[in-house]
Image 1 (cartoon, rainbow, N blue to C red):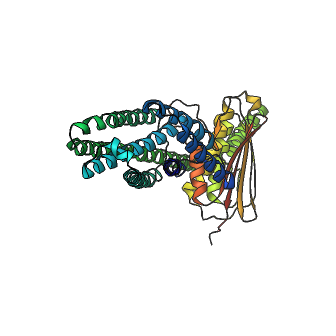
Image 2: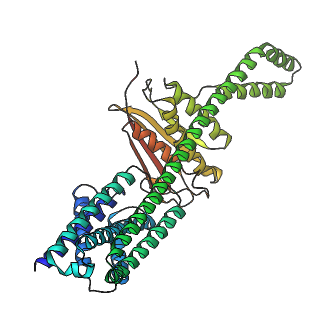
Image 3: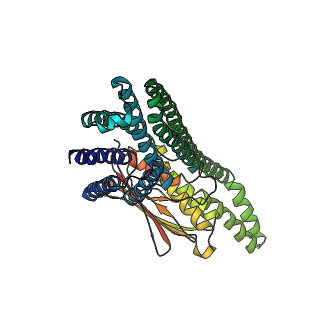
Length: 438
């Protein structure tokens, strides 16, 4: 009876460690009490399943354990299957190598082979306690390491790591099978197997360490790309305003000449020519006109440039905007938010028929928040996951970061960022706490 209770407790310990590793690394589908209940229920079901498994071959037990854990974690957590598989395999690897290390060291010290040691109640209990302590130490190390990383890398890297960890686990299963056979020949094999297991632990640790470096590299690439896009947007706005200023100066410089030419056309009774000349000057002046003037130079610059782009693409754009004070948000972050919202809208409507191209927006201050609401129709099917739109572009490493850049900048100021779709209309809502610069 005691052995059964202890066996269940040790199985429960492993399940708790498994779900701690996953919970600290991957977001849960649920929040608040639902999150706690779902993780608790999954842990209990996992424990009962493993505990009640018949004494199959270790390989069959592992396959069944992997399948039931994959099903449970897919229900509870948000990440892709290959990411969940990686953490399940890592946890299983930790459990295997802990048992091998503690078992063989204990066998070598007390001079009893592992099968006999497991039949001795006190010895078996002590061995299990030590193994679980090592489990806890290794899982904590992995939690601290993976909890600091983001998982925005291509699937091929995850699948490669899944295969590597799976191969290591298969080798460890083989070692567990041959260990008792070798120990019958000589107790010295216990220390040899322990040394080999430590070598495996070091090698696997190095592989996972470099895997983490891949995370870091891709995050840096992503940040560099986002920064380059932000800088490009600022350069485009500056270029537009320099061009508009140059055109305005040229028109003012040539005003006397233009009036002389119009006067000459009128004297020649060339009314049509004079009208065409006046319309050309009016159009040139219209291009230099500041359409938006809300009191915030950065927002004015962004909106006036994007409105000019929309006109070039025959997009009807209507932006209602309140007077906006000078905010504490940096120009780069404000550009990242507003420019990316409008760029996504322009990209979405630009592929539609001309008569269907429109963008509508509101920018207003309400209850100490700067609110930005932009709507546009879309024609292609959108896939939204975790408030993110899956990019339609083939190079996902260097594309699809528009909304990610918005989210990053909004979160920097503890704001709110949401996307919605309804009746083939896409809506972005951003709310930023107002902290007015003096």
